[in-house]
Image 1 (cartoon, rainbow, N blue to C red):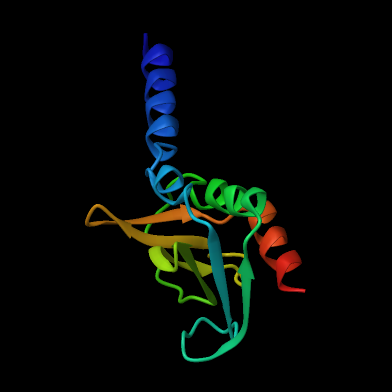
Image 2 (cartoon, helix red, strand yellow):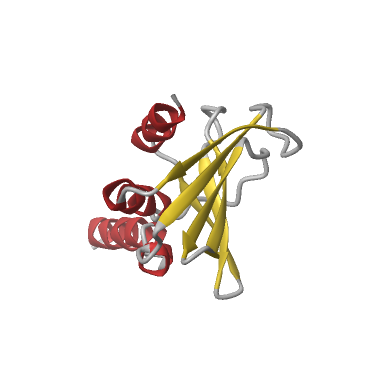
Length: 132
């Protein structure tokens, strides 16, 4: 009986952490994304490079990464930001932290709720690749 309860609790905990935020559906209609790369030390004071993506496949991949599963609120700074656009209007701004192995995340506000989602190794590789 105790085993059953522990397994049930583990399943509930696992699925609660991966509950979709809705950000993917919200930004799926974007026609471009501007990616700002900051200095990389956790502060937001210096933009060192800006990349604009217009390829729908890349935009969709980025939306998938941002939806990557909620994580604990992170307070370790940011080293970039994403700005999803549609018809030259900003749909959503997303802050990113990817240069600290101990703290890699996306952070955004949706429906008056702040979300922090996991920035995976695959998402980091994507962001580094498009930066080049």
